[in-house]
Image (cartoon, rainbow, N blue to C red):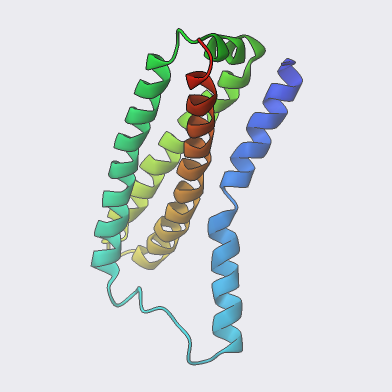
Length: 155
């Protein structure tokens, strides 16, 4: 794969995985505006939300460790070597790295949710980032399942 195409793909995938959180937040604001009685009481349970998002972030980091272990185990497969030669794995590794950074960001925001200053802002960031992380991990899981399925039929 050409370097310019790889860079474009990495940038576009990074931006795509950053969009679900803000889009769902804007959708929530629209629904809240249209239906006055509708709201999520997350701010009442701010400490619990912080614990849940921090736990999610570290659990997903463990899942990503398992993902890379599976890929290392499949390294000898001819399909995996061909993907690597074509440059597809450089894009996958970028998304993997980007997801790890995003998960650390989520964890940091979850901890800062408990602060007295700007805790509400960090809670919104933590929840939005958690939604983004869900899409990132789902994206990598789909890729890994497809690679594993295809590599099981080839030597």
